[in-house]
Image 1 (cartoon, rainbow, N blue to C red):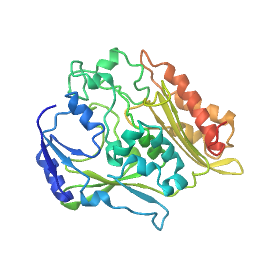
Image 2 (cartoon, helix red, strand yellow):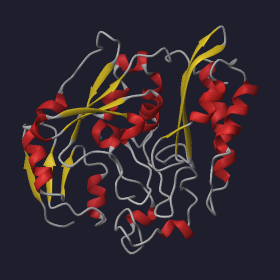
Image 3 (cartoon, rainbow, N blue to C red):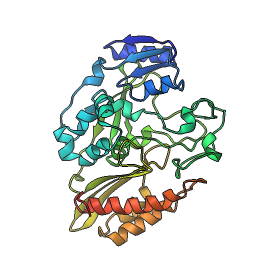
Image 4 (cartoon, rainbow, N blue to C red):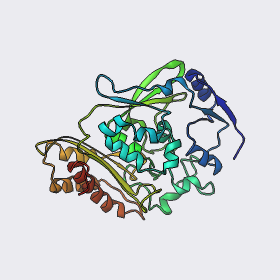
Length: 334
């Protein structure tokens, strides 16, 4: 690990100034991803700014008058997943968080850090291999290498890595909003589906944060998905593994007819992938297995598998159907 300066402050404006003045400064929350990257010499920050004491990132906001819930950026994943309001109103989010990592990591990892974690692509982690995300212009080792775990949607010839988060897949399906603050206290809200980026020609940019901006909170708007939602994660082993395919499926039903539906997928793209084709097909239709199969098939027609991940197309189709079936069944095992 390389030498770095450690800073701590409760002033968010001071943090923004540090980030603007030093492009190599990084925010330190739980450190569950950043410290690993520093040990592997993938991340080389010259300054770490501890975020636990930053004023605006600790605001705890209960359900608002509109029924939305705001969760602080520095709140731990475990406490968020087990919060009674989250479990009651957004059980799919709780399921997603608890399916990720280990209990020890969830106890340390912060919500803001979860959003900003980097890909777990082996070529990104191996500094001896080419990686445009780690070193722009060096090439993508996974494009012609071992790409079993990699993207089937939205990739470019510059990067085929996938976003690793479970929490983010659920937040994408829940139409969450990312609250950020920049220089001079300037605040803005970013729709969750616009927060993360597809790789394009700049895969080194994971999100749409501007220089000096930091996440302060995540707002989840009120919905009627609680009774019919489910988070499904398919992985190589039952725990401590990233998703091969994951699906966050939620719907609002009236007399078994779908009046609102939201679906997001993980393990398939550089960002949580909103399954808009499947959503469009299902809206105003009966919540039946037959309709779920057609919707899943329509969505997966857009997939562009690589040499070693063709299996994800069929796996994704089956995972979509299963997640939708379990959501329609009240989240109970079918």
